[in-house]
Structure formats: C-alpha cells, structure tokens
Image (cartoon, rainbow, N blue to C red; front, side, top):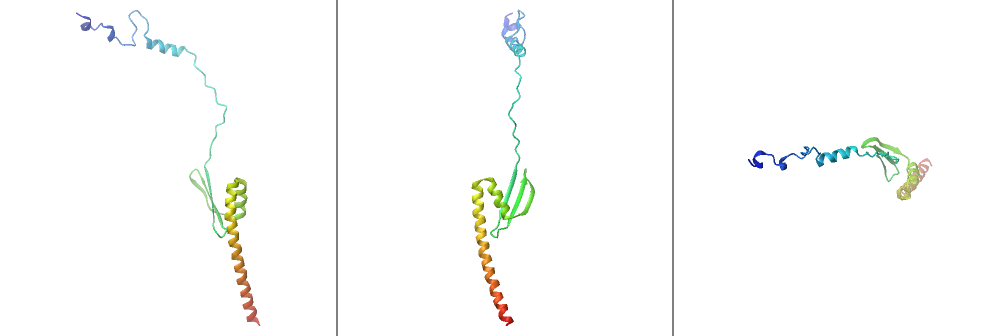
Length: 138
C-alpha cells in the first residue's frame, strides 16, 4: 500500500495536533505565549466626561411688543406660550452674545417705534374726542 491509501501522509494531520515528536504546533505555542505575556492594565482617564443637556428655548415676538417663550427638554415640551416682558427679553439677549443682542435690539427698537406711533395716534384721537365733548357741553 502506498502512503495515499493508508492515510498516514503528514499533510492530512490536523494542525492543532501535536507533531509526532511530541512538540506543540505553532498555533498552540502562540496561544500560550499570549497567555503568559503580562497583560497591560488600563489606566482610568482623568478627563471629565461631559454630559450634554438638550434644551431649546424659543422666544417669539410680535410687532406689538408681545413676547412668548416655549421651552423643550429632550424633545418634550416643558413650557408653551409663556408671556415674557420685552425688557426681560432684552436683558437676556444682552447676557448671551452681542450678535444675539444686536438682532433682538433691532427688533425691539422697531416695535418701540411702532408703539410710539400708535401712542401718538391714540393721543391725537383722545384730543379730538375731548374737543368734541367740550363743544357738546357748551
């Protein structure tokens, strides 16, 4: 019989088995080397982990100077339609950033001008009504 027929060919032996002279194969040797090598210990990071909080504050104003605030926390509406004085909006904007405060001050200035024009109009109307009332009393 030939070697092929008897199955004693060394090329058909599994790689994980020991060689005929009792030595370990290369795969087993590497596994033991990895196990016996000193494991590196992980050092804890000294950096603080930043935890972010998602808050969305929406401030809405009208030309009449009425302001409202809506607040959302992590996608959930916490406050809706809360009336806010224009002075509070102006103060808060000034505390945040100049780009924000400049834009809001422009809007507030326009609203003030419109309110002053409306006031002048109403004062003129009151004066007309007083004159008409004075004529009726005479």
